[in-house]
Image (tube, rainbow, N blue to C red; front, side, top):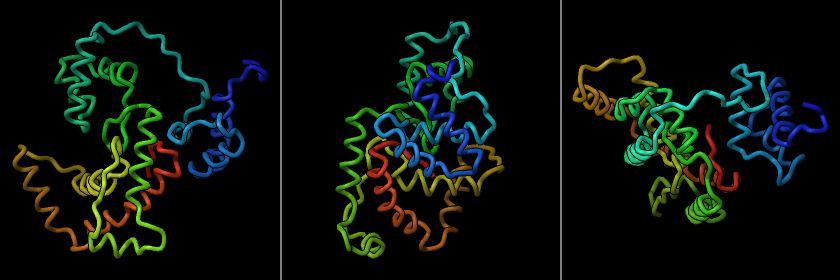
Length: 239
């Protein structure tokens, strides 16, 4: 690939790779790219994804060629069934989905990534690319939910004087997703259970053990999450 013919997206990935090597935070990398490339800048989501890839050791800045032979299990009925299952339970794993459809994990990955265009945010399946309407709705709801300027956010949230609005397509702004489940998963990591009743009992005991202000802390984080949604132009964001 000659220097003159480098696509703008690849050019930005080269910059991302260099800055990752300099240990520049992902948010700062996105900010610098915005200043340099303006409207041609990669989305915040894509910048963060490439930052993670390069930190994990990836060397290529071009997309990986998708030259595998088509999988026989990737059929329209299976695609439709997978979409239905994901919409019913956005926390399904690839392995669980494969068991439901009776097809291989590789076929499920192809269906989810290349046909349904889902990816995970805070352990929940979400549309791979938000439409302009999706972004606009997220920003509008976030703006309306944010307290007015000068209002004491923590005091307002603590007393729950106003309704807490959940942004659509937004596990990145739902306290249960970005706050509660991550801590629950961390504390229960490595534990094994004999049946569902044992899981339910353990989770209930874990909830009872949390200090009085545990859940309030998650709610208090909401104004900043809403601000991040607005600042990112409605794009997904993660910690």
